[in-house]
Amino acid sequence: MKRLMEVLTMLVVSALVVAGAAWAAEIEVTAKKIKDAEAPKIDGKVDKVWDSVRATKVIASEGPQGKVEINLKVLYTDKEIFFLFQWPDKTESLSRFFEFDGKEWKKFKGNEDRLNLAWDIDNTVKDFPKKGCAAVCHKVDKEVELKTNAADERVDIWHWKAQRSNPAGYADDQWLGHEAKKIIYEGREIARYRGNDAATSGAGKGNWDKEAKRPKYTFKEGVSAGPILHEKDAVEIKDFGKFKAGDRLPLETVTRPAGSRSDVDANGVWKDGRWALEFRRARATEDKQNDVQFVDPGRPYYFGISVHDNETDDNHSHTGETVLKLILK
Image (cartoon, rainbow, N blue to C red; front, side, top):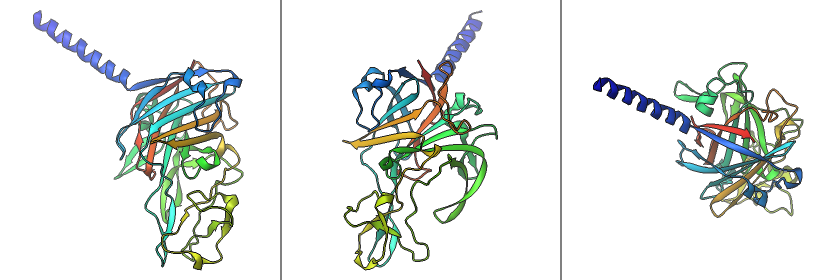
């Protein structure tokens, strides 16, 4: 009898540990409702209204920068929803350049800071409520592919980029699906399961002349050169003789697209080793296929987060199997 009680006790303790581990892997994010007049301005400067809601601490890990603690707050009104993300980053990275070495132009070794949200649109992605965004992470040979598990599963991606989208005040509204499409990326053909939402105009242009093997655009007269080349300030280069070794030009021009691709307003400010990033989106959009709809306070909204510190698509810290669950209170 004594031995039986010991075994039963061990089983109960084990069950509690397992249950506790499962519970610890889920983080509930509570959104607070506010009046329209209280809505924060999306400028990355953190209005006082954000003090009215408790921050949720989320850990993104497994990436090259190690663990990143993100403070997340969410507010909403009858028609809009707002997000505030704050996280440490030692440097503001705006490093997408071509550099002239005195003889030829080469791509500079560097990228930009970024943040991504991945939303299970209709709570249809298999295992998302159990595994978070790890449910769409698949190992294929030695590569890792992000894709859904079936044709009827869809993920809404909000992709903020410090150099390419932030200066234009938005985050790229994208989707993740099950069917691959072939694209040319940095000169090689790859399979992508992600695409941009529909747009009636593009988000800038690539700044490279393939035949001439040099940049195509520079800053128009009167505009100071820097990491951001707005499309309205870009002119074709006529005289390459004026460039000297060490000169740089951005990889792309920047402008805000029109249409569903720019549904998410965004503005981030880097200061004293931290990013403060604000998002705003309508709770309901016209693109029901590719956008999560925040119209039902009675359901949880599952999502994941990843952050990039001056890195490419594959190198990022992320929430992995931590399940983030947004609740509209």
